[in-house]
Length: 368
Image (cartoon, rainbow, N blue to C red; front, side, top):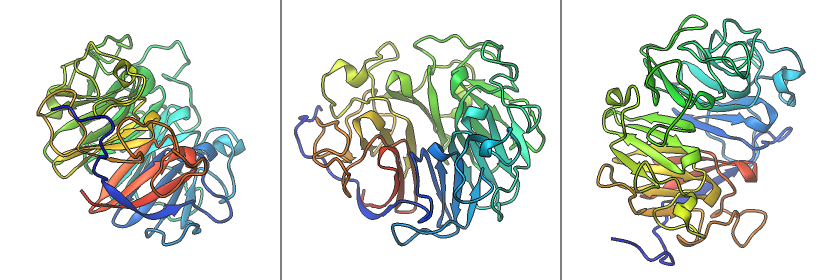
């Protein structure tokens, strides 16, 4: 049943804290957020660093416990204004931790970095690199822009996810997701399978494959969600194993079919079903939270696998389903508005949102 675009939707969360980061050097366009065991991890993407807070902050500005990618907290340069190394970052994006290991998608260095134990010192070097032979190289697909891809190479990896044992990497520039049976312990590890392509060497794409996979998530039931940004859709499989290769998804959120690629489904304004440059999604309870980035809103779907193109069950960031403006009615942002948010995660009833355009992380209480 279609919902009137002007209906006031159910809100999914309420603000607990608008967090701006370090008092000495606040966030600039953070694109990654992760919460685990009440610790907060943020990719401060615009300033080429990752921050760690051992506990969730309680005020607008709090000093971090650890900063990675820079020699000091105030450092902001790409690769710390040096050559690439095990201690540097360039445009870090997605991240994941179980409280023991830390994995970071170091997107513009075309690699994924792994810390085998939780970092405790500023600028601590990573232990393992994926996508490069060593820590001192950062070319896409190992040798340059026109180089072929393989089971060992990466090109703009923006998203990572793990269950603590297995690892999935959204290899965005190669238009695929790589799967590792175990979190690699050695540099330049080969992926075991590829999702979204028929083989490791393929980079060309068709509508029936993920064209721009920015985020990958897997829940405890084995459901897989790939946020396919450039096609304004989220692709969902009931069993991630059956997604290996170029198997079609079991459900599409944001489009009616794999052949439909319309921005907001070719409407001038958003609808309860449409998406616009979506960059992330996150399984929560039996449903899915979707970061509808260019519409500056978060959508909630309480149940999976009913039909393609499902109607949203709740909303945050906009007053109604027909509005898609950033910081609607307030250019500076408020507790209920968003400006091109990129990343979302949830632990228990705490929702973390990388509100990228407002240079902040929102810590909200979920009420769905």
